[in-house]
Image 1 (tube, helix red, strand yellow):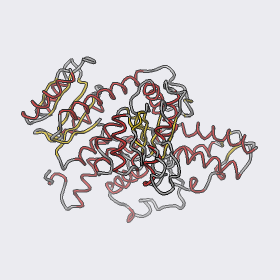
Image 2 (tube, rainbow, N blue to C red):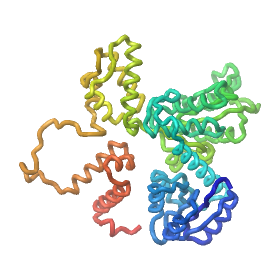
Image 3 (spheres, one colour):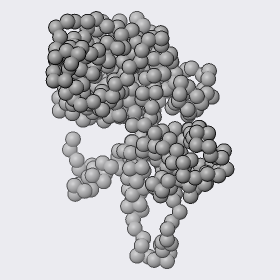
Image 4 (tube, helix red, strand yellow):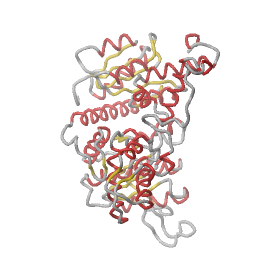
Length: 473
C-alpha cells in the first residue's frame, strides 16, 4: 500500500459495485462500498481517510454532484472519479469543472479503471504536497515567471516536483499565460537541462507537414524532400520535446504519436528504418482537453497517455496584484530599451490596469506597456497614456464612472423593476466578465457556485413555462 487510506466506491448497483471492488484490489488499497449518498457520507465520516472516491452521479437518494461539491468544499481532499453511463458525458465534463479529477464511462475495462484511479490518487498526492510546502512563498520570481500570488506559488512548486520526474506533463491555460515558459522551466530544472529543449507549435505548421516536422523524412518522401531531414523528436534525443497546441494534431497523426510515446521508436516519413530515441514529452493546449475528448477531436487513449502530471496556469485576471508587479517589470525593461524616463505608474493608472480583465493575459499586458513606452515619455505613466481598448473596456473589479445621470427610483417610479431582474443581470454580467468561469464569478459576488447553478436552473425553468420543481429529471 502506497499510503494510508481507502478507496470508496459509491454505486447503487450491487453487481457493478462488487465487480469494481474486485478490479480495484490490484491497487492494494482497502475498498469500501456505498449504495447511496447517506451511506457514502457515513463511510467518509469515519476516522480513516479516503484516498479516492469513485462516484456514480445517479443515486437513489440524490445527485452525486452534491457529494462532489461537499468534498471539494470540506477539509478532506480525496481524488474523485465520476462514473457515468454512455450519453451522460456532458454531465461528467460538468463534474470535472466542479472539481472531479477524472471520469469513466460505463462499462469500463479493468485496466482503464486501475490506471485512471492510480493517476488520480498520484495527482491528488502531488497537490497536497504543494499545499504543505511553505518555504519561499514570498518569492515573486521563478524561472522567468513574475508573480507572488498563491496560485502561481502552487505552479512553481508543481514545476519543481514535475522536473524531478520523467513523467509526461500536460500544461493547460489560456493563450498568453506562459505555457512555453512553464515547459522551459521544467526542462531547466530537470536532469536533462544540459541537452536540447525543442519546442514545436502544432497549430502553426500545415497539417500535411506536421508528421515530417515531428518524425523527420527521407529524401524523395514527397515533392520537395530533396534530402534526409531529422524531425523534432530526433533533435530532442536525450532532452525534452515540447508540443504546444497539441489539440491541433490531425487524428491519424495522433495515432502515430501515441505509438511513439508507448515505444520510444520513430519512423521517418518515406523510410522503413526504425530509430530508438530517449525524449521526455511535455505538451500544452489552451483548450479544455476533456471537452476535446468528449467532442471526438482528441483521442481518449492519447489523452490518458499524456495527462499524467497536469499543470494549469491561471489567467492573469485571477492573479490579483501580480498584474501590477508584471506591469512594473515591463515598464522598467522597455524604458531602458527605448531610452525613456519612466520610473512608475500614477495610482489611477495602476488602478485601471488592475481592474482590466486582460483576455490576452501576460502577452497582452506586455504589448500594452510596450505601446505606452514607445508612444509616450515622462516620469510616471498616467491614465491618458493607456491604450484606448484597455482604458475604455468594462472593469473586472469596481465600477466604471457613469457617463450620464440615470433617474433614481425616487425620481421616476416607472423605472423601478423587480429585484429579481437586477439579480439576474448582475449574476450573468459577472459570469461574462469571468469568461464563463462560474466558480470565479461566485467568488467575486460573494456567493456559492451552487447558488449560481440553482438560479440558472430556475431561470431556465421559467423560460420553459415551468418552475424548477415541475421538472422531471
